[in-house]
Image (cartoon, rainbow, N blue to C red; front, side):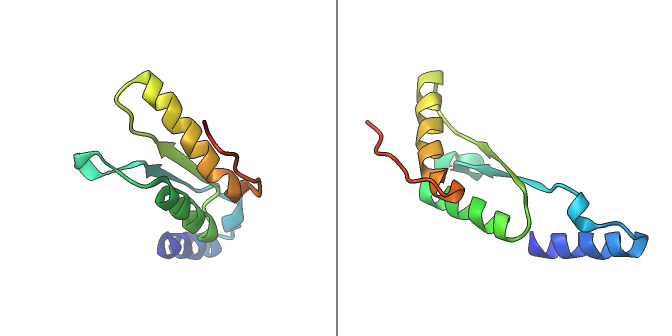
Length: 94
């Protein structure tokens, strides 16, 4: 991401556009590759933070779950894991 953001900034400078006027986004997954091996949510949060530090403004998270109920639980767990990124204190999930 830093290399791509740098290239974008160079192209913007060449045409007189402010690179900060462009919103950048990334997709982060809770499973790796085609094997669907789950990634620890702490690692997902680290990825989101690293992309933010590199200048990315929006992170879309693709959560893996076998059914809707597990999907809802995964979203809850992910939300709790991401709270420190928003400067909030995580709460213990039941």
